Image (cartoon, one colour):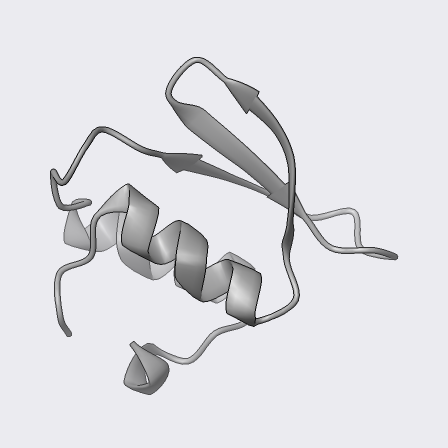
Length: 68
């Protein structure tokens, strides 16, 4: 799997129907209409997300790893 930064992941989830609800510090909080799931994506410049966190966020967002 390709390493992604928080900003790159944010753009990816936006393309899959997620909407930015608010920003709390360096964390961007995303939600989807009709879903109780919230994604908290840390955006720290171009620093790549750790692989475990990236996989967890993709699973919560229901985005297959092959689409990355």
